[in-house]
Length: 302
Image (cartoon, rainbow, N blue to C red; front, side, top):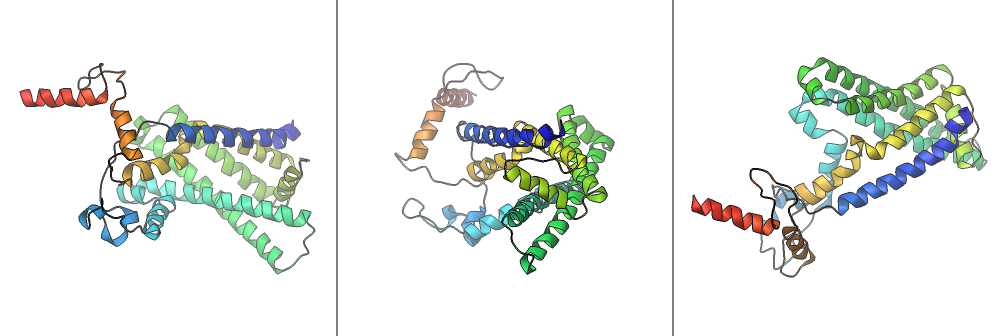
């Protein structure tokens, strides 16, 4: 059983995660165009803030400043800026959780590089010693930060009445998986694998397509990792990919609609989409263009 959990199940989980994530991204990309926020300043406009304030945007293309956009993305991805500004208590747990995830991702990369170096017969030298040191520091820090952040968020949601009312079993299950994921790695590190040699050897066996169980705790760690990968594309944790569309297609999308452009055709196609639902402000008939015209006529009549 340990061999199946630490070998074939890992391969299957990685494959399913990649396929499901690709399908989800394709689904997001194919959804109808969202209403743009058009809030300025926009990061990729840099110091000028908004091209609409500076020049005739129909005549020439405005300058783009990727550095400012990258800085804005990093502030949100690494520092979790919106939570820091608007909900400091939530940020106290979210920040170490996300830092733990990033460090553990780097740790896995270092383990793969280390396993490759050993398989290639690289001699012990300065760079391999540095690699080993980075692996130990990154792994220990990532697992500790991720576990502390997950436990804090679970305690916060259980103890805060407002957050408890907003939390459902699915959210608690996701936090539980994160606690198991970081906790299993930390347990193996503290008890049997202080230098991460066993987990590196196991990853090396996976890369050679000859998985071998180096220790029951390592097999347990890989089982939890596989479950995490299987759940990831179907959970709210997919926001790591969905945020691209939020920022680049909604918040920061300021492409002007030029006559005959693909954007104009896309918007026109969306406006002619049929309405299949109803609400007090929306009637179940016609397309969105007719809905807007009907609402305008009702407003003029008042």
